[in-house]
Image (tube, rainbow, N blue to C red; front, top):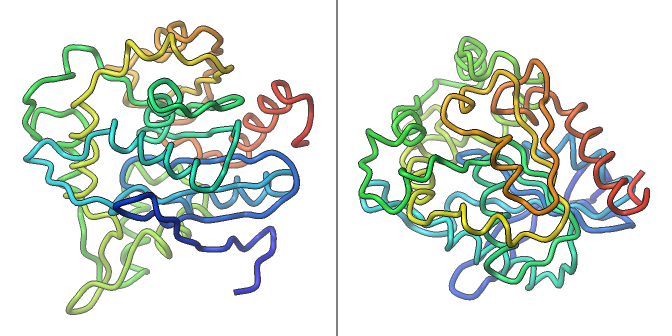
Length: 293
Protein backbone atom coordinates (compact mmCIF):
# COMPACT_ATOMS: atom_id res chain seq x y z
CA UNK A 1 0.00 0.00 0.00
CA UNK A 2 1.36 3.42 -0.95
CA UNK A 3 1.69 5.61 2.13
CA UNK A 4 1.23 9.35 2.58
CA UNK A 5 0.94 11.52 5.70
CA UNK A 6 -2.78 10.65 5.53
CA UNK A 7 -2.29 6.90 5.12
CA UNK A 8 -0.14 5.00 7.64
CA UNK A 9 1.68 1.75 7.05
CA UNK A 10 0.23 -1.22 8.95
CA UNK A 11 3.14 -3.27 10.31
CA UNK A 12 3.95 -5.96 12.87
CA UNK A 13 6.82 -6.22 15.32
CA UNK A 14 8.00 -9.27 17.25
CA UNK A 15 8.53 -8.70 20.98
CA UNK A 16 9.80 -12.15 21.91
CA UNK A 17 6.97 -14.57 22.60
CA UNK A 18 4.35 -12.55 20.72
CA UNK A 19 4.04 -9.69 18.26
CA UNK A 20 2.28 -6.35 18.04
CA UNK A 21 0.50 -4.72 15.11
CA UNK A 22 1.08 -1.00 14.76
CA UNK A 23 0.48 2.02 12.55
CA UNK A 24 3.49 3.95 11.29
CA UNK A 25 3.30 7.52 10.05
CA UNK A 26 6.70 8.32 8.59
CA UNK A 27 7.89 11.86 9.09
CA UNK A 28 10.99 13.87 9.81
CA UNK A 29 11.59 14.90 13.40
CA UNK A 30 11.21 13.25 16.80
CA UNK A 31 9.33 10.00 17.33
CA UNK A 32 5.93 10.15 19.01
CA UNK A 33 4.50 6.85 20.29
CA UNK A 34 0.77 6.81 21.06
CA UNK A 35 -1.03 4.14 23.09
CA UNK A 36 -4.82 3.93 22.96
CA UNK A 37 -7.48 3.45 25.63
CA UNK A 38 -8.84 0.10 26.84
CA UNK A 39 -10.95 -1.66 24.23
CA UNK A 40 -10.17 0.82 21.47
CA UNK A 41 -7.54 0.84 18.72
CA UNK A 42 -4.69 2.85 17.18
CA UNK A 43 -6.86 4.08 14.30
CA UNK A 44 -8.55 6.38 16.81
CA UNK A 45 -5.30 8.35 16.89
CA UNK A 46 -5.46 8.78 13.11
CA UNK A 47 -6.64 12.42 12.79
CA UNK A 48 -4.15 13.44 15.50
CA UNK A 49 -1.26 11.35 14.16
CA UNK A 50 -1.96 12.55 10.62
CA UNK A 51 -1.50 16.13 11.73
CA UNK A 52 1.57 15.46 13.89
CA UNK A 53 3.24 13.45 11.11
CA UNK A 54 3.91 16.64 9.17
CA UNK A 55 6.83 17.25 11.53
CA UNK A 56 7.52 13.98 13.35
CA UNK A 57 7.39 10.20 13.09
CA UNK A 58 4.33 8.67 14.75
CA UNK A 59 3.94 5.08 15.92
CA UNK A 60 0.68 3.69 17.33
CA UNK A 61 0.56 0.03 18.48
CA UNK A 62 -2.55 -2.09 19.06
CA UNK A 63 -2.95 -3.46 22.60
CA UNK A 64 -5.95 -5.77 22.81
CA UNK A 65 -5.42 -9.31 21.55
CA UNK A 66 -1.68 -9.94 21.47
CA UNK A 67 -1.95 -12.04 24.67
CA UNK A 68 -4.69 -14.39 25.87
CA UNK A 69 -6.45 -13.43 29.10
CA UNK A 70 -9.63 -14.06 31.08
CA UNK A 71 -11.33 -11.36 33.15
CA UNK A 72 -12.47 -13.93 35.71
CA UNK A 73 -8.86 -15.08 36.18
CA UNK A 74 -7.44 -11.65 36.92
CA UNK A 75 -7.19 -10.36 33.37
CA UNK A 76 -4.01 -9.17 31.66
CA UNK A 77 -1.65 -7.53 34.14
CA UNK A 78 -0.70 -3.99 33.13
CA UNK A 79 2.85 -4.70 34.27
CA UNK A 80 2.98 -7.20 31.41
CA UNK A 81 1.60 -4.59 29.02
CA UNK A 82 4.16 -2.03 30.22
CA UNK A 83 6.98 -4.50 29.68
CA UNK A 84 5.58 -5.31 26.23
CA UNK A 85 5.47 -1.61 25.40
CA UNK A 86 9.07 -1.10 26.49
CA UNK A 87 10.15 -4.16 24.47
CA UNK A 88 8.25 -2.82 21.47
CA UNK A 89 10.02 0.55 21.60
CA UNK A 90 13.37 -1.18 22.05
CA UNK A 91 12.76 -3.49 19.10
CA UNK A 92 12.04 -0.45 16.92
CA UNK A 93 15.14 1.29 18.31
CA UNK A 94 13.07 4.19 19.56
CA UNK A 95 15.15 6.38 21.86
CA UNK A 96 13.82 9.22 24.05
CA UNK A 97 10.34 9.15 22.52
CA UNK A 98 7.59 11.64 23.08
CA UNK A 99 4.75 9.54 24.52
CA UNK A 100 0.99 10.04 24.38
CA UNK A 101 -1.33 7.67 26.21
CA UNK A 102 -5.07 7.63 26.77
CA UNK A 103 -6.80 5.89 29.70
CA UNK A 104 -5.17 2.45 30.03
CA UNK A 105 -2.53 3.54 27.56
CA UNK A 106 -1.52 6.46 29.76
CA UNK A 107 -1.08 4.24 32.81
CA UNK A 108 0.86 1.62 30.88
CA UNK A 109 3.25 4.30 29.58
CA UNK A 110 3.79 5.53 33.13
CA UNK A 111 4.67 2.04 34.36
CA UNK A 112 6.97 1.46 31.38
CA UNK A 113 8.82 4.72 32.06
CA UNK A 114 9.24 4.07 35.78
CA UNK A 115 9.80 0.31 35.85
CA UNK A 116 11.01 -0.98 32.49
CA UNK A 117 13.79 1.35 31.45
CA UNK A 118 11.88 3.40 28.91
CA UNK A 119 13.26 6.95 28.99
CA UNK A 120 10.76 9.28 27.35
CA UNK A 121 11.57 12.90 26.62
CA UNK A 122 8.06 13.85 27.76
CA UNK A 123 4.62 12.33 28.22
CA UNK A 124 1.04 13.45 27.67
CA UNK A 125 -1.31 11.36 29.83
CA UNK A 126 -4.95 11.73 28.80
CA UNK A 127 -7.39 10.63 31.51
CA UNK A 128 -4.99 8.00 32.97
CA UNK A 129 -6.47 5.22 35.09
CA UNK A 130 -5.03 5.45 38.59
CA UNK A 131 -7.71 3.97 40.81
CA UNK A 132 -8.01 4.59 44.56
CA UNK A 133 -5.31 2.50 46.22
CA UNK A 134 -7.77 0.17 47.99
CA UNK A 135 -8.70 -1.28 44.57
CA UNK A 136 -5.24 -2.71 43.97
CA UNK A 137 -3.84 -6.15 44.86
CA UNK A 138 -7.29 -7.48 45.68
CA UNK A 139 -9.42 -10.35 44.40
CA UNK A 140 -11.98 -7.94 43.01
CA UNK A 141 -14.65 -9.73 40.92
CA UNK A 142 -15.56 -8.32 37.53
CA UNK A 143 -18.95 -7.11 38.76
CA UNK A 144 -17.28 -4.91 41.40
CA UNK A 145 -14.73 -3.29 39.11
CA UNK A 146 -16.10 0.18 38.18
CA UNK A 147 -14.94 -0.12 34.55
CA UNK A 148 -14.80 -3.86 33.79
CA UNK A 149 -18.38 -4.33 34.98
CA UNK A 150 -19.58 -1.90 32.31
CA UNK A 151 -17.35 -3.11 29.51
CA UNK A 152 -18.28 -6.78 29.74
CA UNK A 153 -21.93 -5.89 29.18
CA UNK A 154 -21.17 -3.87 26.06
CA UNK A 155 -23.32 -4.69 23.04
CA UNK A 156 -21.40 -6.75 20.47
CA UNK A 157 -23.64 -7.47 17.49
CA UNK A 158 -25.07 -5.30 14.70
CA UNK A 159 -26.65 -6.14 11.36
CA UNK A 160 -24.46 -3.70 9.42
CA UNK A 161 -22.49 -0.46 9.66
CA UNK A 162 -25.65 1.64 9.41
CA UNK A 163 -27.25 -0.04 12.41
CA UNK A 164 -23.97 0.23 14.31
CA UNK A 165 -23.73 3.96 13.60
CA UNK A 166 -27.32 4.58 14.66
CA UNK A 167 -26.78 2.63 17.85
CA UNK A 168 -23.54 4.41 18.74
CA UNK A 169 -25.05 7.82 18.06
CA UNK A 170 -27.86 6.99 20.49
CA UNK A 171 -25.42 6.28 23.35
CA UNK A 172 -24.20 9.03 25.64
CA UNK A 173 -20.62 7.72 25.44
CA UNK A 174 -20.49 8.22 21.66
CA UNK A 175 -22.78 11.22 21.11
CA UNK A 176 -19.99 13.80 21.55
CA UNK A 177 -17.60 12.02 19.18
CA UNK A 178 -16.11 13.77 16.19
CA UNK A 179 -17.70 12.44 12.99
CA UNK A 180 -14.44 11.17 11.49
CA UNK A 181 -13.57 9.41 14.73
CA UNK A 182 -16.93 7.63 14.74
CA UNK A 183 -16.39 6.49 11.15
CA UNK A 184 -12.92 5.21 12.00
CA UNK A 185 -14.32 3.26 14.94
CA UNK A 186 -16.96 1.59 12.80
CA UNK A 187 -14.49 0.87 9.98
CA UNK A 188 -11.61 -0.46 12.10
CA UNK A 189 -13.10 -1.16 15.51
CA UNK A 190 -15.63 -3.62 14.12
CA UNK A 191 -15.22 -6.75 12.04
CA UNK A 192 -17.38 -9.28 10.21
CA UNK A 193 -19.19 -11.59 12.59
CA UNK A 194 -19.39 -15.33 11.89
CA UNK A 195 -22.86 -15.90 10.54
CA UNK A 196 -23.25 -12.31 9.37
CA UNK A 197 -23.28 -8.80 10.75
CA UNK A 198 -20.60 -6.98 12.71
CA UNK A 199 -18.95 -7.36 16.09
CA UNK A 200 -16.30 -5.44 18.02
CA UNK A 201 -12.68 -6.09 17.06
CA UNK A 202 -11.77 -5.95 20.75
CA UNK A 203 -14.51 -8.04 22.33
CA UNK A 204 -16.21 -7.07 25.61
CA UNK A 205 -14.51 -10.02 27.30
CA UNK A 206 -11.06 -8.89 26.17
CA UNK A 207 -11.80 -5.31 27.20
CA UNK A 208 -12.94 -6.46 30.64
CA UNK A 209 -9.79 -8.59 30.95
CA UNK A 210 -7.68 -5.52 30.28
CA UNK A 211 -9.51 -3.53 32.94
CA UNK A 212 -9.19 -6.37 35.44
CA UNK A 213 -5.47 -6.60 34.78
CA UNK A 214 -5.17 -2.98 35.83
CA UNK A 215 -5.79 -3.82 39.50
CA UNK A 216 -3.09 -6.48 39.77
CA UNK A 217 -0.37 -3.94 40.52
CA UNK A 218 -0.50 -0.64 42.41
CA UNK A 219 1.23 1.97 40.19
CA UNK A 220 1.04 4.85 42.68
CA UNK A 221 4.54 4.31 44.17
CA UNK A 222 6.00 4.59 40.65
CA UNK A 223 4.80 8.13 39.94
CA UNK A 224 7.66 9.93 41.74
CA UNK A 225 10.12 7.85 39.69
CA UNK A 226 9.02 9.37 36.36
CA UNK A 227 11.62 12.04 35.68
CA UNK A 228 10.45 13.50 32.39
CA UNK A 229 7.97 16.39 32.03
CA UNK A 230 4.36 15.18 32.15
CA UNK A 231 1.09 16.77 31.08
CA UNK A 232 -2.07 15.24 32.59
CA UNK A 233 -5.28 16.00 30.69
CA UNK A 234 -8.67 15.62 32.34
CA UNK A 235 -12.10 15.86 30.74
CA UNK A 236 -14.34 18.32 32.55
CA UNK A 237 -17.35 16.02 32.15
CA UNK A 238 -15.56 12.69 32.63
CA UNK A 239 -17.45 10.14 34.70
CA UNK A 240 -14.09 9.01 36.08
CA UNK A 241 -13.83 12.21 38.10
CA UNK A 242 -16.13 10.56 40.67
CA UNK A 243 -13.40 8.11 41.68
CA UNK A 244 -10.12 9.25 40.04
CA UNK A 245 -8.44 12.44 41.28
CA UNK A 246 -6.20 13.53 38.41
CA UNK A 247 -5.07 16.73 40.10
CA UNK A 248 -3.70 14.66 42.96
CA UNK A 249 -2.16 12.22 40.50
CA UNK A 250 -0.40 15.03 38.65
CA UNK A 251 1.03 16.26 41.95
CA UNK A 252 2.75 12.89 42.49
CA UNK A 253 5.03 13.33 39.48
CA UNK A 254 8.23 15.37 39.99
CA UNK A 255 7.49 17.56 36.94
CA UNK A 256 3.85 17.55 35.90
CA UNK A 257 1.10 19.92 34.87
CA UNK A 258 -2.64 19.26 35.11
CA UNK A 259 -4.97 20.71 32.48
CA UNK A 260 -8.75 20.52 32.33
CA UNK A 261 -10.32 20.13 28.88
CA UNK A 262 -13.63 21.96 28.89
CA UNK A 263 -16.82 20.28 27.65
CA UNK A 264 -15.10 16.90 27.22
CA UNK A 265 -15.65 13.53 28.82
CA UNK A 266 -13.26 10.64 29.36
CA UNK A 267 -12.77 10.15 25.60
CA UNK A 268 -11.07 13.47 24.95
CA UNK A 269 -9.22 12.49 21.72
CA UNK A 270 -12.39 11.10 20.12
CA UNK A 271 -14.50 14.10 21.12
CA UNK A 272 -12.01 16.88 20.44
CA UNK A 273 -9.27 15.67 18.08
CA UNK A 274 -8.28 19.14 16.88
CA UNK A 275 -7.95 20.54 20.39
CA UNK A 276 -6.12 17.40 21.50
CA UNK A 277 -3.65 17.80 18.63
CA UNK A 278 -3.05 21.44 19.53
CA UNK A 279 -2.48 20.66 23.21
CA UNK A 280 -0.06 17.82 22.41
CA UNK A 281 1.86 19.91 19.89
CA UNK A 282 2.13 22.91 22.18
CA UNK A 283 3.37 20.81 25.10
CA UNK A 284 5.96 18.94 23.05
CA UNK A 285 7.07 22.20 21.41
CA UNK A 286 7.61 23.69 24.86
CA UNK A 287 9.61 20.68 26.00
CA UNK A 288 11.53 20.03 22.80
CA UNK A 289 12.25 23.56 21.67
CA UNK A 290 9.68 23.98 18.92
CA UNK A 291 10.84 21.02 16.84
CA UNK A 292 7.43 19.56 15.94
CA UNK A 293 5.63 22.76 14.93
